[in-house]
Length: 433
Image (cartoon, rainbow, N blue to C red; front, side, top):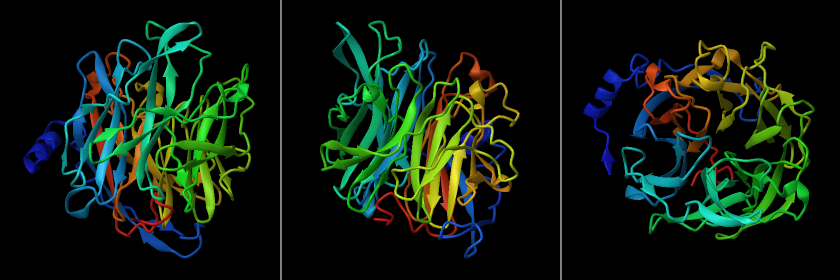
């Protein structure tokens, strides 16, 4: 296991360009929230601090880490603590979205120490016969999340079909990929594909980089995005069943689209707060948000804005939710942060509270969760670890060439959000385990 001692952390602070921010980010900010989802209901002060750590890094001129996301297995760690399992893809810097390996690492002591990243044979790319030839297919954009009903850590993502020389081409088939973790062997099952309705619309459909929501009966609300032939990508939420080994499609909700010249809607993420479901969505031009009373049928999408009416400035990358019982938060990137040198303005990583009634970001609550050092931070994950902590995990994506001149080095960050009030909600059907 890698041990990150106090002296190691002090050295990191001294030598890192974010050291001036400090490992503990500024003083807590008093926030107003309402357990019923309204900003002006019962008032409580919800405060938090941010602590950043780097459990691993990779940048050797050929590869870097991407898509670091963590899930937990309750009581599988030391002294009854959860085991926290992080998956990561390697990115080949010579190409675009070339993911030739998925790795895993874990912590049994809430992130004090971590195992070394280990290549997962069962999550590796494989050859499939597509369009008359053998082509490599990778599972990527993976997100492990605990499924309480089955007592399993279930990871979901999507498949990427490459040409024979590892290029991404369109159109191409895409599926939701999934796998199940075994803490006894520290291994994942061979990734499988979610079977969707046999229609042209779902021949290119996947759940890459999405936050799902599990219902008390074990049903899974899984946001997906899909591309009907000749049309821009759409978003919907698929209701699925999971029996501990097989993920099965049951139905899906209304289909959301955008009438512009972009590629459409992508990478939706779902949460539940104050009696409503909220969906945040990626688009080339601007991020969007919607809500639903039942998790399947959503209102027309609206662009993300600040509470003063100005555009949020997020575009062409994902956003995800941090959900506390006393407040709803959005994590995102945006323009206008002295970050024109960053690819698609995908750093720094911000967090701010959301007014769920108006579905806007409250500008005065915005804080930097992970500072920018030239590399993009747009692909990240969120994990509720305990009533006191929520983690955001993100890596420095070392493309395009030269981003390291601003100080980035391929670090994987764990940003610990430490709450002053216990979070009564969690990923396990709204209750902590």
